[in-house]
Length: 198
Length: 436
Image (tube, rainbow over all chains, first blue to last red):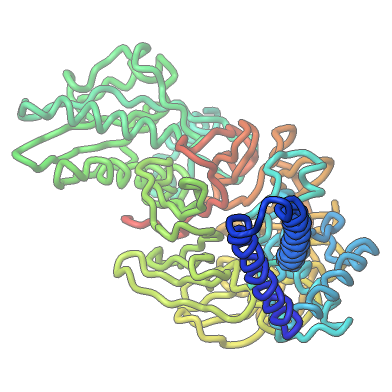
């Protein structure tokens, strides 16, 4: 901060100095004799060149400062984007289950570990774990199965250190399929636990 | 027919009227029911009131449809008729029985219509044409808008004579249908007529269950964000809500009582509890780690079928309510759910998932005599018996989108109950006749 003030002060002095020099030179042109004029004009040219170069340098320095500010801002923006991306990934990356099962697969555990990391980095956040099923089987049994999936995911997160108070659960059974098709690949997608930030 | 002829012979030899009164024409538990041909000729207009002919035509149409629906009566084509009681007369002495036996009509219904202002009177008689005997005769008087009810009352009388049970004609059906993507609860008459939307939660609404008096409906809805249980009086529009943490699902009323069983999971495990009609917990019924869901009481309330995963896969179990012991009912297949008791308490229908489709199966309550009723028609789920045990409702995806179907208790005559927008699931038949 103090550095910036100093630089700005220097700039003010420098620019006002230049103005003085130039206005003085103009006056001289009118009053000095002809012979001396050439010399004087050379001097003037030199002074002008020097002044211009100073001004250029000053301008460049100013630009550098502005650029620095811009860089900070864009870094901040990039960080925000990255965080939003992490949040998006947290919400959009589901864990999947086998047919009629609420057991966590190794892949599901790996995903849950990443989710726990994110929750540790975002301590203010609470999350609802949604349990879902594919369309096969009874609506009623699937409500229970969906809840077991949500509870299994929640318990794993608690076991690796996330506070239970930050984790709610809800089962939607087979009521909210991601893919409404009646195919094995749709069923694979729909047997899932999903994570919603509150 | 043979049976009736034999009886006619017996009656001729031993003319004892009392014997005939005890006789039941149709055993609805017989899986090989032969349909009895029945004629409903044009009704007689008695005072020639201007609307009598039209009311008579409508009454015949309602009657024909209702009796055909039973699956054990064949309503005959009027083109074959040789006699017209509307002209010759509708009482026993006026009916020309030979004209009916000669075309194979074993039963005959004659009707007379009297209309004055907004009132209508129906005089209806059921005859055994071979015995030349009136089996039942009733006079109904009411507002002409209640014609359907009056005709159905008489169909109940017909059913009483033929099967020993009033039948299904006053019963109602509850089911779930999607409305603009949301599941809502609907009710309709036994034949799919007059569907009415009962809930407007604009949310996921599931698993409707009638109380045995037919006045209360219990169901689950996500209208408040989570699966809560709603207990609603259909007439007084009042009710109670059960909203413990977790699931509050799959209600089933205790027969004849203002209490119900439901699956609650506030303990962290899905268990079945007994609740008062106002939703207060009386006691926990199941004590088993793993899913216990979908209770369904036997008609006498002494047993409760339910679905449990305690043996590794979802299977139907039966709880003895007195001793508290559980017995596994289903052993074939890896996925058996949605148990439904027959009204006599002898059989249980359920949905079995096997080889990529779901089918309705029926088994005796002791586990014997397993029969499969559907097959090769995609997914057939959620069976529910008619109050007389003659028919079974279920949902089927055979036409693509899920619809409500009905079939005889032996799996015959599978047909769509009603066509409406959206997808229909989870049908349940009321156990009491609403207006009988």
